[in-house]
Image 1 (spheres, rainbow, N blue to C red):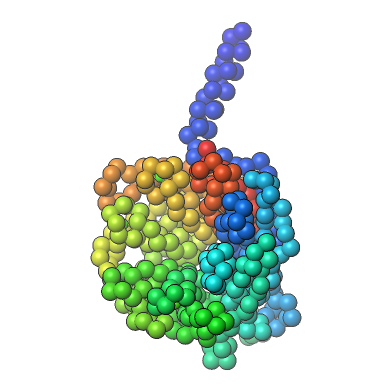
Image 2: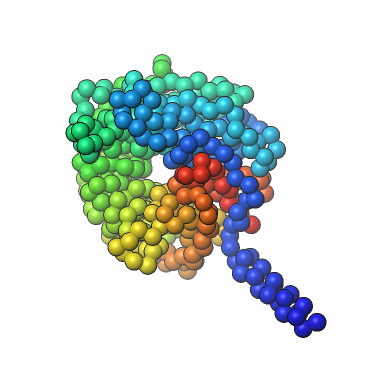
Length: 409
Ligand SMILES: [Ca+2]
Ligand SMILES: [Ca+2]
Ligand SMILES: [Ca+2]
Ligand SMILES: [Ca+2]
């Protein structure tokens, strides 16, 4: 009798701890193509259930090979909530690295825009026009490769390991307010950013290229100084900096400020108001031994006087987590933005629930950890997968070729 009571007490206490967690892992995960680097979710076919798309970069081979990397997106569709099946993959350029779900053409449905890392046959950027009924038309857009330098490492024979320009990330907005969305892309291999103007005929015009030293890796768009021209913030992977570029109109950008990102290998950059003062802040994740998420709180214009470093690991000289992606959202609907961090090395998604007092200049967070035993979380997205009105997370698992779901309780 006593034994039973003790057992019951233990069960209750375990449940009590578990109830404190914001998410629970969904019982099944879903197969996607090899080495997914990015994931997005949203309703592409108008059935009110989010579809899931991953970029299947594949393994990177010699760029002179006919097929030097993967060139597909996985496309998961659910007839019933949570019952995802893979439809035929969608064709991109080689090494699809990041995908955005955004409407580009005159049809209302969301389209897909993909930044490809291994450019062959001038397939640097792919637009997958959503034609409805789960059909997409792939259209490729290129950078004039001949004019570009290769600025990254070579292989043992002295040949480039990758192609120019090596797109790694993209952001979409209508910079010139002409009604056509424009795309900016980071060209990591060539130290450039490319601006593809949206146009009426043919969707995107030839890109305007701007040199950016330091290996641009991730990019966000915002009119920081409020002059009506949209500006850029860029994470520089090799020089460990945040670069701010002022928009000059017509796809031109000029460097106005750069400062240390306070960590090694900044790999992901987000733009959100983390302290609720109405000014958008920058959130950067570092892939290297710092294992840090750093928040740069903005004061005015291009100035970020206050910096907050959230270190996930215990040792600063050892890669414990291997941060690869960050997602920002108010997961518990308390009006304060929370963070989730995809960690390749620790196989964890670390969730940071914002526990700040109101009007605090710097946010404070409670940590939750979700471990994926055999998979390495590389990318995150959010959607209400089960239709309960709560924001869930999609997790791309790099070496398992799977998508896991973290369901909001
Ligand atoms: Ca435009
Ligand atoms: Ca501006
Ligand atoms: Ca702020
Ligand atoms: Ca919250």
